[in-house]
Image (tube, rainbow, N blue to C red; front, side, top):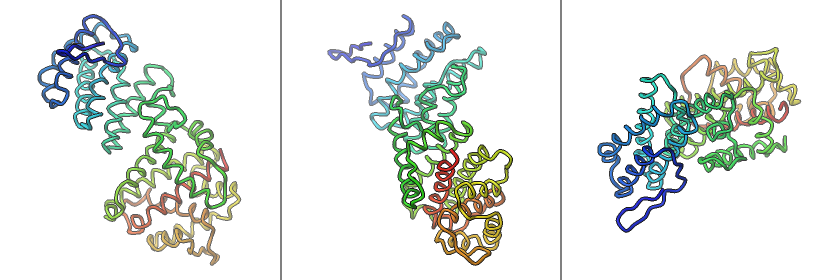
Length: 377
């Protein structure tokens, strides 16, 4: 599609033709938008979107059963969204998709038909995550994935939303590939610390092939990616901004969610057991560690008596178990996971050791997950 604006001709890249009336509505919208692309979104909203939306609803009426054409429709709208994005106008980019999706949902509720909104939700999610709204972005991304699942009638459709949710850093054919690669790079840094223990040559590619591509459940890998993104967000904040009690509560919440991922990863390989203490003992045995059920129970009892002291001593490798001996790093990491898994399930309060030693704690949890993949997957 080309737009004539005085002596200027603007070529719309990636344009996907639909039908004469709808194409004419897009032409009118794009012409108005590119005449003054710096205009406030409210101007577009008040002056031009209502007319366009009438054509949009008529398009849905005429193509209620055609998911491919619906997908084309939303893909064409990325022309405006990308311009907002390129100009750094993220709030307006989000507001644009919010308006389009809300209008679409209203049509669905009125007619009883479903429109395939996967693309719209995906690009809205991208915008939210770029702006730092990680949880909102993940909610929208998984809403996009649900649309893809319904449309393609398969639990794991090979769409950009799934590639994002499963941290598929090997597939560059996704709009948000740069962010996925960024998360993979962050994971690689955490993996390097595990490799530095001399316990393994586990690679990032091994994690993808053995765990991300073949997880115990889709939910487990979705939760893993979400936890990793939240850790990455915290990593970009100044550490002195994370010293409050609320920061400790937020951090222990992430660690507790990570513990659930580890729990599910272990339970998938040790079907008879479901309690985390039994799963931890199972991992200890398979990894040739010496951590016993009694060791874990002793560490947990010590944690109940003095949370900060126990966690700090386990992190520093100086905690003395019932036999009076200290343990190697990976055994302390496994004890830390059990203590916080047990704490997170019963207590919402935070303690200074969580915020002050969070970098060490997150490494302990990743070490246990890496160990799980290393010896069980």
